[in-house]
Length: 361
Ligand code: HEC
Ligand code: HEC
Image (tube, rainbow, N blue to C red):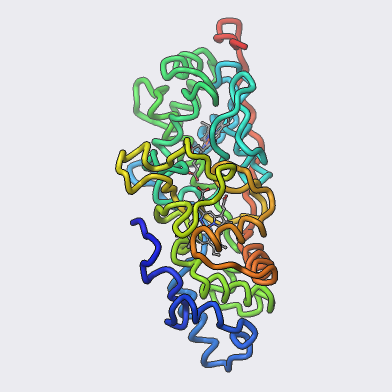
């Protein structure tokens, strides 16, 4: 679903008022409401957002087993899947660092920069599709992309299989993950294993999730004011659901096109996938989970300051000039979206032998 300026979804806030009135809702009053009214607010909030579940969601047609998750973890950290043997998924989606690389655009094969900022892999399993333009329908399809992308890992599909078959220790790991298959080292099985591992990279128990599940004290007063603004200003029209985003597509610049530094004319987003004119500059709405850990922002990675990103969203998506104080409160609320970070022990990878294909620098 794509929504455009003028849709009455945008800006029709929690109290069912239009955009102009919504802007006037006094967040302080929101806090002083009596208990019954408060219970209603929690109920409405629960209708808009969902907490992150505490265990990995199942993937259709790709059941998780401990052996498959363990293999997926090895492959996620496996630099020998890249042509240079020096880049793994973890190079650009670092576990322990929000699942990102903290670069405007990622540094890949032969020090080349790609065209877009690396989104986090954390909670990606809950998104409607993968990549900024949604060109992969799920994690399994996505995982094949970076391996063969010339500016990411720079290898080929056949070489991925050759490489893994050239490392004897993988035979047993694939056999355990895919019991009963006579030739389990296939690209398809690589993608499936990585996907089930990625599905474990979720961040439950954020203060906001604890609030959603009934703990009123999980958010402090400023965070609640920020939440009220987030809803009433209309951010929630796009950033909603379990990932506070990730569920739909929208143009970047619904009301006002941001400058060419932030939205360069060359990257038309979803248009490249659908070739439909109305999809020009349309992107998948990003998740705002763990957003304070994943600077810089936007598909170009040009904005390092979260408060500035919020202000840009106000003008570009809602035609609303947020005051500094409003942007600050929304920023404080977004801080409550940081959950428990996944704890992952580094896998021991099977050793190379003399016949293992060598790196090509
Ligand atoms: C050189 C850096 C780099 C490497 C290596 C890399 N990625 Fe990415 N990844 C990116 C960038 C950049 C994007 C966004 C590209 C786009 O949207 O066009 C991305 C997107 C993704 C997404 C989509 C997330 C979302 O919210 O849409 C997932 C999932 C992902 N990568 C997983 C992986 C896996 C698994 C591997 C290893 C097989 C990997 N990446 C290797 C840079 C990298
Ligand atoms: C009409 C839909 C829509 C509305 C309304 C909206 N956003 Fe966004 N938001 C997007 C899209 C699309 C992007 C991705 C833009 C890009 O980089 O191409 C985005 C990106 C962001 C980012 C950067 C995320 C990242 O990982 O880089 C933040 C932060 C953000 N929005 C916060 C907000 C806030 C706060 C509001 C309310 C003031 C808001 N948004 C309103 C659609 C929307």
